[in-house]
Amino acid sequence: MEYALECIDVHKSFGRHQIHKGINLKVVKGAITYIIGPSGTGKSVLLKQLCGLMPPTKGRVIVNGKDLTSLNRNELVNMRKKFGILFQNAALFDSMNVFQNVAFPLVEHSKMSKDEIAKTVTEKLRLVGMKDVEDKMPSELSGGMRKRVGLDRAIALNPDIILYDEPTTGLDPIMCDVVDTLIHDTQKQLGVTSIVISHDIESTLKIADYIAMLYDGKVVLYGTPEDFKNTDNPYVKQFFSASKEGPISII
Amino acid sequence: MIRLLNFLGDHFIGIINTSGSMTLMFLDSLRLMFVRPFRVKLLFKQIEFIGVNSLTVIILTGSFTGMVFAFQSYIGFQKFGAEQIVGTVVALGMARELGPVLSAIMVAARAGSAMTAEIGTMKVTEQVDALNALGVDPVQYLFVPRILAGFIVMPMLNAIAVFCGIVGGFVVSITVLGINKTLYLEYMFQFIELGDFINGMVKAFVFGGIVTLVGCYKGYMTTGGAEGVGKSTTESVVMASVMILVFDYVLTAFMF
Ligand SMILES: Nc1ncnc2c1ncn2[C@@H]1O[C@H](COP(=O)(O)OP(=O)(O)O)[C@@H](O)[C@H]1O
Ligand SMILES: [Mg+2]
Image 1 (cartoon, each protein chain N blue to C red):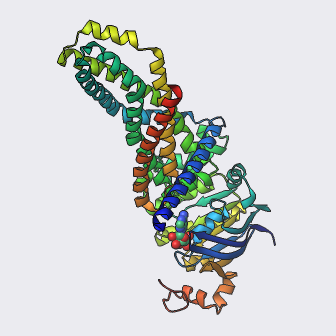
Image 2 (tube, rainbow over the protein chains, first blue to last red):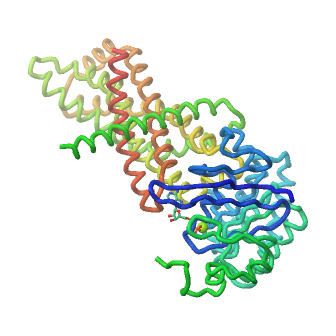
Image 3 (cartoon, each protein chain N blue to C red):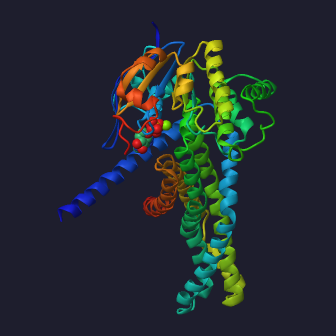
């Protein structure tokens, strides 16, 4: 099996606060890998380390055979063009309107003409079910709309690896399904590698090729949805049954 | 006692640390000024931003400082009958010292703080990460246009402050203090040199870099949500003001 991305013994601390205590994870190329786990376990922090936005305190992250921690800033900036990232709260540029946000990567990195960019942006927005919002500012959008715009911006440059940070959190059930389908289709059409952070167990089991569950700074279980359905792992069982009884402590 | 030493030591290390990383950021920005893409549009936006934000306040501070300065120096010079020299003193003081320092502190308070708030908000809402993720160097995108704009706009604002100060001093001297107009102007033009203005312009240029660098740096280093943005913004103004005064001394000593 070919891997797009590997974490080797990744440790991360903020001051004395230890977030990751040795994460080992191999992300299969061209597949959808879900990372699940309770809030505050450091899923977002892991995502940022995967694309070199944050250096691990210890350990290595390998992308396409290159160790991210050994790259200089220029190489990192270039490497990141291979990634499309949807941030947890979309992180739209709030000084720009929707059109400028989605067009941003195209303006920066493609050789498209103004007309082509305009056409592409409208097309992409339609793809996520949005129309006539080009002139709106991010502050005028609902959380779900912002997420969809953020998704468009993330995939505008046809990246090899797409990272989604809780793409469906805060969306209504119908929009959830739209986004799930979008993740699925994007992966099938473009053959990209997708890494999705999620709380949504139903869509995780439906769409994921592989799942990794994170708890207390480590991967407690990695496997296919089948493995997860049949496991005896108490952490997974508690998380899946949405119960407060179990080994996962609620602080 | 040991706690005090500890505190001082930590503080000292903190200052060294900040100066170091700020210097690195500055050198990086300087280098990136010459690397494509050149963001001309952003540069003009920042020039406008700093200019528009600061113009009124600079005209006001400039004029009133010149007016007060005329009053105060009149009190001194009147004692040995040298009132007509007030014009020279006001012009010299404004051009070499008060113009650049006051306008820089005003720009720090108006535009520098706003820069910190803007970039700080971008930092805590992951927009800076998003820039990075989209293959755009945030230092080049955020720092370079602002610092360049600072270098360009600050001398212009200084010129306006100096001009307003001299005019303010003149008006007060003639109308309120009743100094002889012809003598006032004669002395002023006789004793003031182009070098005095250039001296002030060099300062303004440097201060423009300081204010914008601090504004960007403090914003970029922001952590901890909305509260963190507020904290950085205050710190930005304080730090820029202190640095302006320190560099003012250094520059004055150098160019004496
Ligand atoms: N830049 C940072 N500085 C300090 N602590 C951070 C930073 N980013 C995240 N954390 C901490 O790391 C922990 C994990 O955060 P996060 O990855 O956002 O969790 P989640 O799994 O919900 O996405 C939290 O306790 C958070 O406070
Ligand atoms: Mg998160």
